[in-house]
Each structure stands twice: as structure tokens, then as C-alpha cells.
Length: 393
Image: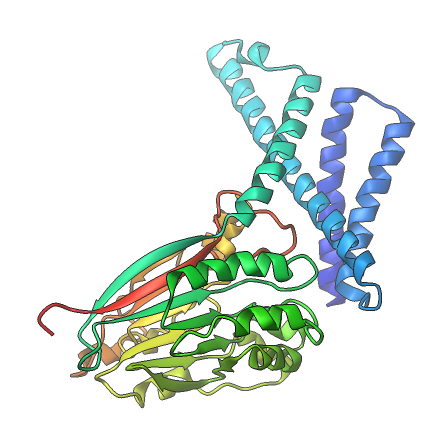
């Protein structure tokens, strides 16, 4: 953990140094603004470390103000860094064209001062836009046909929430925005696919009351995400249960003609918890029921393909702030949305079985935010799934 902290600190130092050089090229030398810049950068570095490592639970208002200040500052500097990198890429391409083709494209570019003001203005606009995009939680409807609904049931509606990150920034008001989308959809059941909480939730009665006000006919179900473990998995699970949820930890539950299978997040291994192979659980399920696999991270076990109908995941936030989207694409194979899975060379033997299934995965952008309360080109969503009977079945 110490090594990770050192790497983060060094990365932030290089990040802020690059921005400083670009700003100094625009405004020139001057000790007053340099001291001010250094003080703000140090505040972000040590403020973020305090949020992650210091217990500020006895000072809730201070922690809330510090959280907003630090995370908004980090977002602004990241976007400013991205803008300066894009500008430098344009300058490089202009220089390359001038060198190779004797053009004068660099003469068309703004002055260093103009480039700096453009970058700062862009970062401010993105922060303002991202604030409102994060608040604008919308339903996303997906319809899936199946032959595995019980007789007399033509449709089951599932509402998926994920990556809410209840903590010092996302509290009852933002949660109510999210759950209002769930209430409007009138689902039969609700599932939470991890990272619901991001801090100690012992005294969060307002959020518990909001969840208990949902009352879907078939109940509310949840699985753990990596942040449940970071925040303390025991108290996180207790919060879910007090909120009226049934937490599925490496087990299945039959409800309304569906089978829900919930797997703990892989972070459990780092906390000394072992999980049974999900294939063993899936292989024991009845073949005539629609199986929904709830996993926080969008990772698919090759041997499981063909043993479930639909995997619901989140975790990536769709990148949350572009261009982080491309980083999530490098780490995770499945991008946001619905994808049909095919068996790989390392697994998928279940497809040869008589009761094999066409497995799919849906990766949600999530409904909340982690860190900065912003989203940019990664709109928050509550996903509404209509599992409907296939014609003729």
C-alpha cells in the first residue's frame, strides 16, 4: 500500500509540474502565482491522502467540504492536463507538417497565453457540464426474450442499480434522484451489482428509509463490489440488509420464476475470503429457468458461458470522465451495453450440453460517481430489463 501511495504521489507531482510549465509559458515567471499554484497543488495531494487515510468521521461537515474541494480540484486539474496534452499534440502535428511540407501551420495557432486561456476555459466548462450530467440519471430500457419463464408469466421487469457510491458526496438527495427512476419504472425486483456504499454507513438512516420505500413485489437483491471491501464488508452488508436487501454472497436464490446468482467481488481474496467456483454453482441450477448472474466487475469466466442467461455488471462507470473510457477498455474486455457471449477456446463446454443457454452480459455505466461528482460523456443510468416470453414458447 505504501508503494501505491508513493506512485500516486509521484504521478500527481509530474502531472502538476507539466501543467505549471504550460501555465508559466503563458503568464511568465512570478513568485506570487507560483506560490499560490504550489499551495493549491499541495492541498490536493495531501487533502486526497487525508480523505483516504485519516478517520474524519467525527467531523462530518469538514469532511464533506474537504471531499467536494479536493475531488473537484482533482477533476479540474485532470481535465486541464488533458486539454494541454491535446494542444501539444496539435502543436506537434503542425510542426511536423511545417517540417515535411514547408507549410506555416504553426503561425495559425494561438499564442501561449491564448492556448492557456483556452485550456482553462475548457476545463471549467467540462466541470460545469459534468456536474449536471452526473445529476441527470436516466432509465435505459433493455428487452430480452427467453423460453425460460414459468407458465403464466409473460414478463418480469428488473431494475439494476450499480456503482452508487454512497458516502460523503452522494447522500440521500442524490440517492433519491436515482431511486426516483427505479420507482417510475415499477419493477418486479431490484438488483444492486456492487459499490453501493463507499464509507461507513452505520448511521445513515435517511438512505435506509429511501430503500425501504421501494417495496418491489419480488424484493431487492445485492452483491458486493470492491468498494464494499474497502469500506468494510461487514458493515456494508449490514447496511444492505437494514435497507431491506437480500445479499447474495456466492449463492443463488429462486424468485418469481428467475434464478439469481450472486458472486462476491474478487477483492474478497485480498481480505482473506475464499469463494467457491461460480461454475459449480451455475451447473447445479435447473435448466428451465432464466438465470441472472450478478457480478460487480465485467469479467466473464470462460467455463461459465452457457450456464447462465444474463450477467449484470458495472464497475467501470463508462470511464466516468472521458478519456478514462479508453483506460477501462484496455483493462476490461466488455464495454458498456449488452453483448452476446460466445464460448472461447478455454471454456464454454456447457454449450454442448442439452440445456445450454445463449449467455449475454450487460455492463452498466452506473448511477453514481466515485471521487469527483462529475460525469463527462458517460451518462449515469438505471437499467430496466424486461425479461419477456419468446413468441411460441
